[in-house]
Length: 111
Image (cartoon, rainbow, N blue to C red; front, side):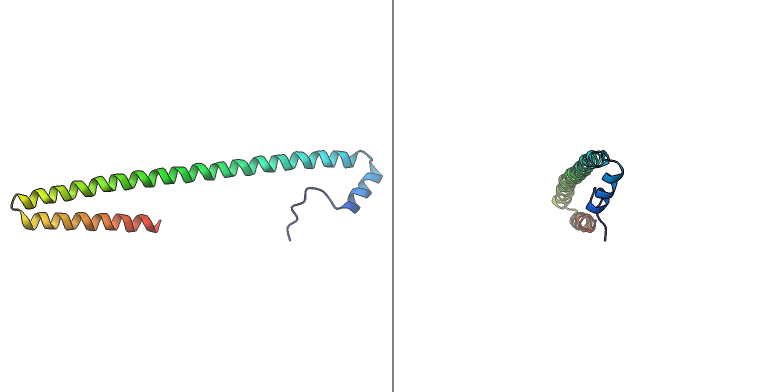
């Protein structure tokens, strides 16, 4: 089992105090400094996770916006093709656009 205590056990502190009366105060001071450092490191680690999460979220929102724009453009172009009597090409282009968009969303959800 991992002991996360910064101070030695009480019996060891008593033995150390017999050797040097000032050692207990020194150990208490150092353990206080160590605890402050651990708290700072934990705060830094949490800030890194927050920034990483925000970056991924911003990337995902941007990707969704651009995917929507590409889908609308592809479907608009296929509508234009169908309107200009190119029914087969327009239908194939619309189907390809929808399949490409579905594939992109499926691949993105796997990450």
